[in-house]
Image (cartoon, rainbow over the protein chains, first blue to last red):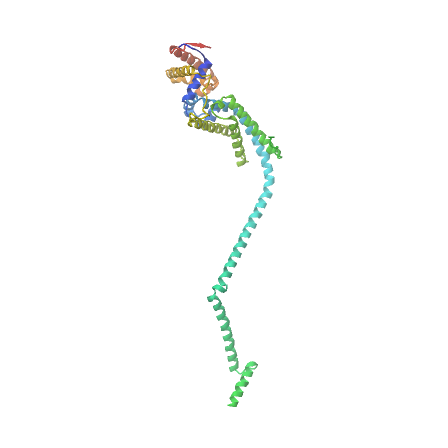
Length: 181
Length: 186
């Protein structure tokens, strides 16, 4: 079968052939960008170019990236302008925002400290309350009693020394009993 | 649905406009380079590029965005879309009795499909018979690269690339004639 083909038809046939056999995308984004920019490292150039010749999708993408390069450069320049103007605005707003953040942190820590103190206070109240308390309250009571005993002893001691006041009265009773016997 | 109201912050509005214009340019180039014929939706890629750039700007407002970084964002978005399209193409077709079964392409009848398949096999055989050094410029030319791009890729001058391509194409056509594909309209 003899058929007529021009270069375009031949190219289309080749692209159909390679689309059928190319398989999944094999080159990564960095390599595709480098190929579009013509900055492939020499040691990888042959392998990458062979892959591009065999994969219409990757070849189309590289050509598209080459055309897009000027637009990407323009966008990068515009974004740098945006960063500068936005950065100035950010600086103006950054100081009050940072001060507010510091105040918030301080209040938060003070609140946590107050909560901790309250919890410790409640805990210690429960520890010495009426239900749990034999040892602690007995201790206080014993201390109180011992004070009174000591006071009694002081009185007895005072009485034995013949001091005046109440002890003087007791002395009188003792003396009356003594005298009555 | 009416378009969303423009942002009140003029700088924010300017940034959105920049990304919208760039995304629209990406979409047009995807279509003009035939990438929309490979199972990807240019509108999806445009949206993806804008979102990725927006996130990068929000992530680090003080970072300098070089053109190569923006190019990588576009390349990654397109590669991801192509890979997703390949996965979709590899998924099994619906059942035969399903109403959504694809209709055969009316333009490509069985005779033409068989003829194209035969031509492709012959083309592959003829290309394989050409030495590697001469084959690479031919295949790049058939893949649509310009002479200057071929020269840059192969590492020769534009004139040398033109000679390599011209002689290589003559050789390829000669071999195809031997296989029965005789006439080439220049």
